[in-house]
Image 1 (cartoon, helix red, strand yellow):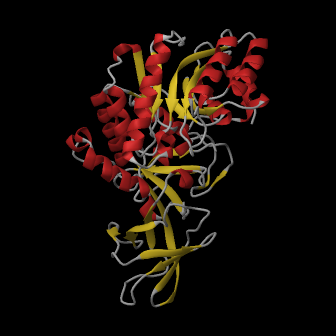
Image 2: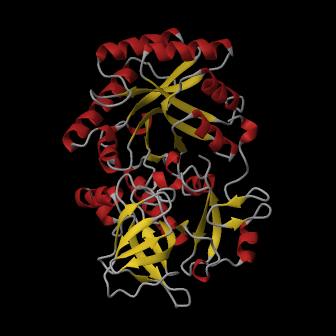
Image 3: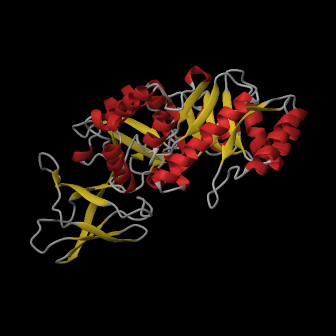
Length: 426
């Protein structure tokens, strides 16, 4: 995707587009325009299935994470690949985020085009066109960008490309573990990468150290990895390897951010090191793996417990009952095209019959047992009061792979009124 291909701000919609879940939209909508539309989910003003966000829960999660980060005195650069929604990026930045984490040059271009001016690309930058995208963005002196390096071969490619343009790329040294993904594994690889950075010092600036602890699943091993990262940072600082003050030290996905905050903040770097955490799924949360890991965080982390309420699921997919062909089965207008299924099937949460006053919680025995492209099989009981045309809200397991199925997501208030519209740019 070239620069000119990226469209407008997160809550604006292209003229004449047909937006999945919302129906036809005419013109670019501002927030006041959205309010005048007077759309309400419970009045069936939206075409279902539709993924929706809840404003009050988004704000709760933003505030919860801000308090947690502030308690440790660290910075937050939430991973934007989760949502790829510039409107949500802006909410996170306005709530105090240091910047936005992304995974690719294309994602960085999308974020920049929608106003993000500090990006940590938690990945290696590889390939001529990807380097060219970042080079073009770096023509803006107000844009701050960092990516990862872990080998002399990669540093040599970056150095050769950016030196011929008279530009300088800011990088973090990525540390890795055996059996994990990218990252320096041992002392020999570390020395080789550092030697390459020294050769290309005019074009490649070492600004810090990065690691991703989520490749490990044992807390003791994770703590050891984190302590290794602090030791490497201390050694390289003593050797005067860094070309940024303060030095950046970054880690933390959505599962172990509390341990990362604890270990890094306890290292005693003071103002010489800026610690940046990168969880992405906290904003919408879920009822699957991320609920499980958040419960573990609440168990092991005193600061998280002191915040009392934890994170709240802020994302639903609403769909209709389209058939009740058997006494114990309902067919729902939601399938693999609409909701993630890699980390657990969607979970029925709310039941609403058009004309009723409000949704109600579903019986505990309702469960999705199978999903096809456009259909879900939901297990029910013979005595359940469920009719064709009823509306069901489903909690999602794994928000990342639900967001990428939707071009637009309405944001609802507590009365299910549409108060905003979020676009995604995958």
